[in-house]
Length: 306
Image (cartoon, one colour):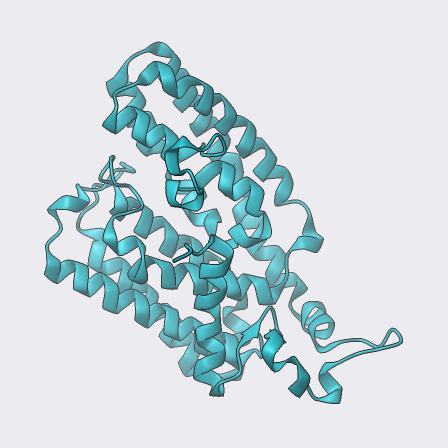
């Protein structure tokens, strides 16, 4: 069985919104290929007419820019953290390198919401072995998870040096990616929000995210923060159309955060080891994050973006 790429996984997740809306799968504001023939005349264009997607983008341009501005700031935060990680690895001190790795993880796990808009850079920063036919043997496997395995599992600090160097370059590329405004849209923002909110309970809950550092809770926390950061610019629009839906998104987000916050200490990026989390709490993580995902689907439907 072929493994799903991040794009396929996110798009399958975002498609849940279309299915709940009545059986038509919408991706990026358009019907999936198998449904394209059913588009109404108002949803198609020829001869330079304005499409519904274009009208939506005009309407939500400010909200999209607001979300991007937050992520540009987080990318700026990310650069010195990976530079410090490189320095720690080059020092040869494994304990310091492992600590620097954990400190470097939060910003990108927020920015990951929009990973579909810069897939190559995302792969360079955050891909896991299953994304490649050869697994860890692939020369294309690099980034955080390559470094994680080398440090926490293999204790091969020397082997991590070239990957840390490349990671700094990749974060520089990410900062540029986030300035290309034409690559982003309200529809892809919601696609990313729904996709990542779905990935936590359906996939990351297995601990495949931070297998060797045991920091999956850190990933969950910052995924949730990142998703909500992109909803916030749209919150007033959703509230104007359906106040109950906007309230549900906020409440679902807070409930999902509340499940895991007790595992963190103020002032530290690191969480308690995910391996210490019992099945009851893991079940609560699953239920609360699916609730968050479903509320985002309803919010996207309210704005005709899902």
